[in-house]
Length: 394
Image (tube, rainbow, N blue to C red; front, side, top):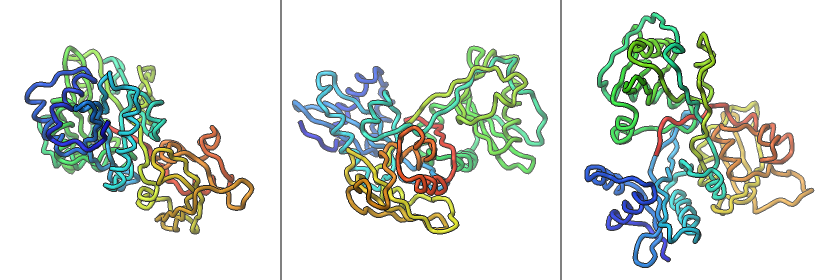
């Protein structure tokens, strides 16, 4: 068994494994498109008996966290031939992937799990969920007159990016999309039809990707920067009422659509979605914008991380009054009873906290971290509030 980076010579073997493991078949055009993407990704594999027995890929992304763009490694395409499963090969690949991402300064990693419990073992944790809606035509928001205008058609990418970037930066864990991602993923997966809402001054304030088929209005992505744009887009959707029976969409977990309806009894589910993992505590925290403080704050964290041993140990976190931070490792552990007891937590818990998915007080309440109450309160004040969201899939 040999674990190594794969090259373009391994492309056909990797695609054969993906088609088998994920039960799909690609056309020649799709295979060629995947070939181009494969060349840009960091693909790791296990060789056994002269063939690729298991593999995964690290897709280079950037993600917004508190308005800043962080380098992120997206783990995808994790697969093993059935005759090689349960040999610990995926565990080896994930550990290798963490080392690779650390070397490449990708301080955070995301993945879409087939099993949350499986990836929790390796340090990933749930970081985002979304609300899934289904509305009948009679349940749609009331049509409202707005001062702006809707334009259907094929808008310029620059217009869509202007709206999306402003929207995505309001959340933690959204992708900072480049042009290639718009072309290869967004336009392909979100719906063939688009409409943009422009305000009275002609400035784009929202858009919707959608499909209308078999009396169903499927929203692939809806983004609005203010209430006027939200109302304008929903009025546009509601104007299809003679053509459709239902509308489906996804929205942030905090979305207030139901509350804003005359009849809030609509179909809605909250769905856990992606997982995240801090790859390097030092790299990630050094970039992280903490909340402004009345005075400098010092907090000790004892982090447990079996698969990324460079994160294990006691760290001293210093947050300046302007929210900038520095962190350095003090040692491997602190004995009970000694002064300056640290907050003890796993890399999963630390990830959930710094992504903004969970708060220190509630994590302490459910036993996912422990430490002096004063230190937990200080961490509570230091971590800014911002909701997590992700509109993409990989």
